[in-house]
Image (cartoon, rainbow, N blue to C red; front, side):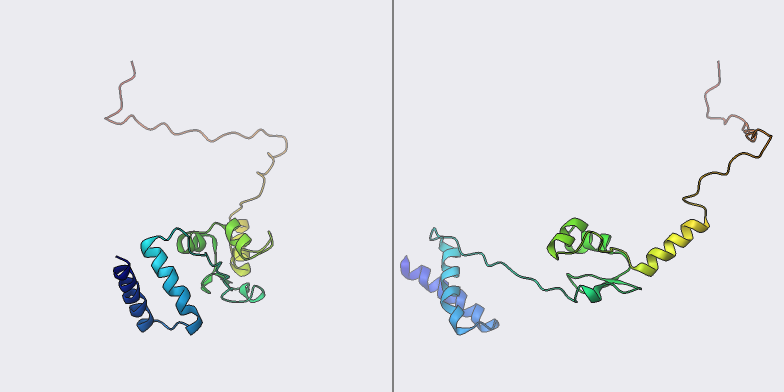
Length: 155
């Protein structure tokens, strides 16, 4: 059985090395990891922490017209949905992963200003006007529509 396990490990490692470039110093580790993954020698393979570098520098990720995703480098107007659907990250996880400040924008500045101007133009964020002096405000009469033929008759 020992020869069979070694032969199987050798076949797998050989096939991997034919298709991938691996440093000569990493080959023994690759053999050991492959063997332990196949036959469970009892010692788990060491987990290497992947240090990911951002696609662009944090300073260059915010431009007036777009926010660049540090995960993939894609330019977006709004990052929140892209992070959730494309990378499975919430805004808090994204900020923690890249050590971003709490006030790091998730929306492009020009886009946010455009949306703000549009909201102000349609009257959002304003309090209702006070009633005219000396007179009470009267509510317009409510229209009474005829009952539909499917409504229950009032008894």
